[in-house]
Amino acid sequence: VSDTSIRETAWTLARYAAISQANGLCPIVEPEIMMDGEHDAATNQFWTEKVLAATYKAMSDQHCILEGSLLKPNMVLPGKQWNGKRSYEENAIRTVTALRRTVPSAVPGINFLSGGQSEEETTMNLNAMNKLGNSPWSLSFSYGRALQASCLKTWKGKDENRAAARRRFRIGQS
Image (cartoon, rainbow, N blue to C red; front, side, top):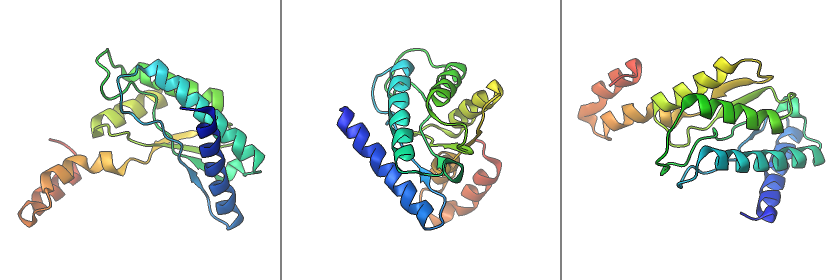
């Protein structure tokens, strides 16, 4: 990934935020590091910090009102094809560390993408982050796909599966 592509993408996100705010809207800024690959969490953390730093530099340059924006980033996780050890606690520490290094405390909320994780993984990772405490932002989720995955799997687009899918959605269990 080139510095130019990071800078241009950050500028585009900041431009979107500035235009949204100029029109009375609260922008949800969504820089995302894709989870495909065999990389470890440290590699994801490096790139997450680099992208977030560029994004907030661009937002500052375009005079965005940080208090009137939300961030919708990825969690810092190893790649989907990573064969090493995975840990909710490590994911939480790396994610919150990356955020503390790059996201101004004026940003009121951070709502995470699921990154293709399951309902349980996303919930456990978010819970581990919130357990760390002392975050200047509200840490929450914006991963409808992950919360609906088991329901959609049960439904399969078939009318005869509707009742079972509704039950599954309400209870959120296997």
